[in-house]
Image (cartoon, rainbow over all chains, first blue to last red):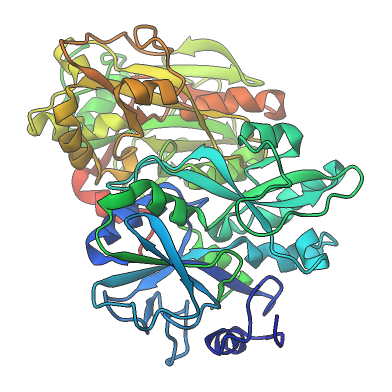
Length: 278
Length: 278
């Protein structure tokens, strides 16, 4: 990790210069975002996938028009006019026909007029609140990347996106802390909200048999009596892309897990972001 | 079934008079709703449950204030001033501490000042569109109640509502019809939208081993080559209530499966109801 940014704009500039990698704990109070970029012809199906699976894929923003890497709607999401979705994440992943091809520091040369970007809420957004409540996530204490796993929670299908499963992130806590952990993260509906499962039985229900072997990120240190607590994770769209396979025509870009965009949304915007006004 | 109503208001009046039961095919073009009524202290958790599980529990409306059985917000949902959520469904179910107690034609005597009603989208709403596309659901052809099953799709937890599973409704179709069935129902995001699974493998994935033994409604007639097609179902909140058990303090009311409220929302309002404006 390079210098620590304290504002969203500073964080994005450091990422653009490739001076920041793991964004956990960066720019406290700002909501962080996962990325999925895909050809416009698939945007409607992917948009439906997000609406049907808002815990794993909560939408924070999207390209205001195909091919434009600079403007995100709603405009409150990213307010700096020099924003570039092709450079302002620390690291990118490139997929072709649902298969991971390669990692990149930016996607300037790969971006085409057909591309539409979706910004999806990230659980890093509620980690400040956990820390403020005396519940700092273990991966921040150990300066590692949060552990992420493929779970058996089905992604409810939308168009070409069928057969996907949810990715979950995991933070160890003691059983007596779980009620408070649930309470603190509950309001963060737009950034995965409260946990989807907890405890060793919860891990089993998700089909996660070995917490020491995460599919992304780093294995976490368990202290005496700790149990795993799982949240839905915005890496999930990458699983949806893998499951869609060659039904996707054109290159797809995503962020490298743990390497997020810091948006201009703050915790104060959560109510506004809540998708249903009832 | 009594006389067939052609408008939402006519349908509600017939239900109030207990002259209508199965509402499938009633008042074409209007969106139909499932019901869950619970004590105000649990309303926030249930609201979160709906926002986190919008395919099974899409919110069409809710009580404008606790204890008021007459007004629903948004007001476009129910526009008649003499509306009464305690009488305008054909049949009701009463739950105590998560257990089904009894069936009722109305809940006038059971309703208390603490009660809050939630109206949840129903798949009957897209059956007119299926019929218009030459894909009339089998249960309409045979004058039976759609088959409904407990599935193993987890309901993502919210507050006291943990451990629930989704209910699904099932309509038989031929494999070559499924693409079209998915297309026709896809826009109905607020009334369960496109199917969650289909085919015999899909049934197996949902944990439904015997389609001839539905948990609610009637077994459906399969013709040669038909396979089951499953949609999320608004009976799901009743499973969430069962799973919450004695964490629920006070009486809970729901509709009898297949016996819905006809709202004043129409298919033309679907775009407006779509929960995320991005």
